[in-house]
Structures are given as C-alpha cells and as structure tokens.
Amino acid sequence: MRTTKSRCTRSSGNVFTDLGLPDADERTLKAQLAIQIRHFIEQKDWTQAEAAIAVGLDQPKISSLLRGRLAGFSIDRLFRILNRLGHRIEVKISRCETSPENATTQIKVA
Image (cartoon, rainbow, N blue to C red; front, top):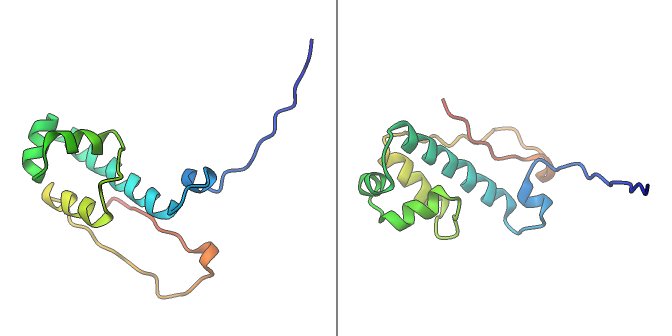
C-alpha cells in the first residue's frame, strides 16, 4: 500500500486571501452582508419575488444575491438593501491605529 503525505496550509482567516483573489477584504465584507440579507429574508419567510418588491430589485437580482453572486453589488448597495429590510447600519472606526496587516473589517449583528 502506498501512502502519500498531505501538506496543510494554515488559513489566513479570509478565504478570498487564501485563494489569492484581489480585494479580499471587500469580498469578505460583501459576503457577510449578503449572508445577513439572506438571513433576514428567510426570517420573514419571503419568496424571492416578495423580497425583490420589498427592496426595490427584480427577482433575478435577488436570486443572484441569495446565491452569493455579488459582482453586481457594491457595499453601499448592500447597505441600502439592509435598510430597506428595516435594519439600521452603524459603521465604527477604531481610534487607535494598528499596522495594516493587523487591521480588520468585521460585521457584528446586534
């Protein structure tokens, strides 16, 4: 029997960085916002058509959003969708400075 050795690489904590994709932090933020949007739509038990009407998009755009196809969605647009779903968004920037390598962006749902 032949054995092979596996090589493991520790994750950076950002899958988009690990995949070498550009704008990894932005992609992560957009994904986190989309997850929250999906969660709020599911909580309301809405169809995609109902969600589309509520947020002012067409159903195919809602479908893309809920499936994580976020190329056509800016962070600002995702914020507006969350507002249209009835949620307030607060952006908080820390006063203390850190090195760029240690700076992070987080989504916290209160």
